[in-house]
Image (cartoon, rainbow, N blue to C red; front, side):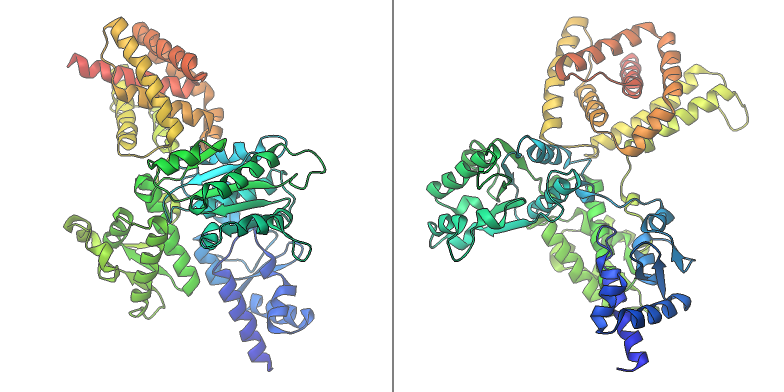
Length: 548
């Protein structure tokens, strides 16, 4: 093999693998693996790779072992321009966009929104002593059941509950339709071949589509799963964790039977039940994945993006991904001179385009560069709504007339804070924010308590009050890292603003205190200063509306 051929092979290898770059899986980028791909020595591979670094085609990450990455595909991943040939560590590289390698459940879009209660239950199942609890994962086809089970495995490793080399053993029960009794033999194994009980030991054993088995085989597996959860040292099932999945409709009688037989049951929401922000994030992530896989920059018109986000997909996330792959493939046939592709409405599959409306398609002239666009553009978190409130408060305190219509007018401050809160509540009313069965239970319980307060005090607090308290309580229990840090840094300012507003309206402050007491009495959550501030503004806004 000539020098030029070897260099080309090494560069092609990095091109291909950096398209699928994952900061938690760096082995493919080591000198040893790269050399093995081209069947050359490590020294020779290192020489050629360092030549490519000097020429600006490859980025060298100087951790031990050294890693080499395709520059342009890495820029696609980071969404920034890379100006240096080498970096001291992967963390330094990720810091270029303020990124941190997402771990286990954080990798799932919506981990803090519609999947939050699902993930909470999965964590409970993994951590319950001594050996966890069996889990039934329910959800329609294509909702991501197996993907979340894989994240359960990652979580178990990261939390030290499983060994680093633990693996997921998946069994599709549909294989046993014609001979269901064989699953027992496969589970136990024989002298010639180890069974599932042995192969999956120390990791997760997933039985997919468990509902297709006869009741007797289901009962056999469920009994062993429950036994494994409390197995003593020395037991063959000690350290074996069971997960079962089913695509049965949640309201079907058979699904109800399954739910009653295991201690932990989670339901993965359909794509249409995910928040608008989550659907946008998932769509953007898939477009980025296609760009990295093809080695091209993917631009998408806002019209096409809106059609993809708002489409109805019978096979949920799986069908959305296929639709995006199809659209990118068609756009690739008309790729531009710079190698980029543009996905417009006409590139979409007919089934997606048939659901679109004219208003969505009208935005087809404006393009989004998915390569350099952060997934964060598709969502707004709570911090983006509350941070401006303190900015308005700082302006109020500064009492600077220029560009500040409020001046020292407390009424003006209240009005602008009410506008900020109104934007947040509109955001929540459109289906954004945290979701899940537990949050719905929070709302129902608080709604009953709010009704009692209305009856007692002759008020007209709405369901929106219960919804806001539920959201605030849920976010307080599971805060995002950015919000947690911001609250800690701004705790004195939050307290001062709440004190200012409360001192101006003692009756309103007393009502907020009553609602906060209700929250603690029913849910055991003691609202923090941010929660009380937002609740005060909410009640004040309702009172103002009633007065008009």
